[in-house]
Image (cartoon, rainbow, N blue to C red):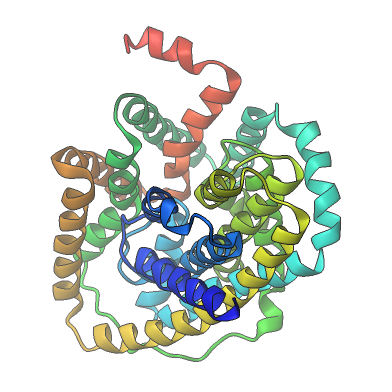
Length: 408
C-alpha cells in the first residue's frame, strides 16, 4: 500500500508542477479530469485519491509563482505578485522574489501543522460570527488603502478602482469565467507592465542569487497565514482580495508582501481541507474533489492530508528554487526587449488557446486600463477592484439591482 500511495503522491506532484508552470491551466481543470476517471479508483483505498489531490493542490501553490514573477502571466491567486516581482527582476533580484514566495508557502505549512488542534476549534467559531459582513470588510480594506494616498491621488485611486471594478462586474456577469479571469488579470498586471516597460530603455541586469536572512521575513509569513485563514472562512474572498488586505497591513513592504502572497495560497488550500472537516464547507476545487470522492472528511483522513501536504510543500519548494535558478540563467543572457516581445507572443497565444478570441479582446481592454493606471502613477493594487467590486456588490445584495439598471 505504501508504494501505491507514493506513486499517487508523485503523480499529484507532477500534475501540480505542470499546472503551476503553464499559465491559464488551472488545477481545477485537472481535478475535473481526475473526477471523470474516478471509476478507475473504485474499490481502491481512498488514501490514493487523497494523496493525489492534496499533493497536486499544494505543489501548484508553490510552483505557480514562477510564470507570475518571471513572465508576468498571473493566475487570480498570484496576480498581485507581478508588479513587485518584476521590480525585483529589473533590480537583479528576481530569484530573491521567488525565494520569498517559497518561504511564505513553507512557513504557513509549518504554522498550520503546529496550530492544527487550535484551528479545528477556531475556524468554526469565527465562521459563525463574521460570514455575513464580507462586503463591509472589503469596503474597510478599500478605505484603508485610499486613506494612505495623498491629495488628488485619493480620487484617482478610487477612479481606477471603479473602472476596473465596473469592467469586472460587467464581464463576469455576462461571460464564462474561463474567458475572463486569465485574460483580464494578464492584461491588468502582466501585459500592461510589459508594454509600459518596453516604452523605456530597460535592460535586464545580471541576476543575483543572494538570499535574505530568513528571520527578516517572519512578519510576512504570519500575515500570509492569517490572510489565508480569512480566505477560507469567508466565502467570496479570494487570495487576491486577501493580498490587498495583507498589503494594507504591511504598508507596501515588498519583501514582506511577497512572503505573504506565497503564504496565502498555500495556507488557503490547507484551511479549506480543515474547513471541509470542521464546517462541512468546500472552499476550493481540491476540497470539492475530496468531498465528491469521500462525501466528507474524517479526522484521520485530515491528518493524512496534512502529512502529504507537508511533504509536497517541501519537495515542490526545492524544485521551484531549482527550476527558477535555471530559468533566470536562461533569460539573463537575452535582450530584454526581445524577451518582452516573446513573452507578449506567448501570453497572447495562451489567451487564445484557453479563452479564444473573446479572451483576447478582454485582455486588450484590461491592458489599456492597466497601462493607463501605470502612466497615471497610481498603484496597480487598485486594479484588484476587478474582483473586489463584484464581490462587494454580490454580498451586499446589490448585484441584482445593478444588473437590472444596466439592462443585463
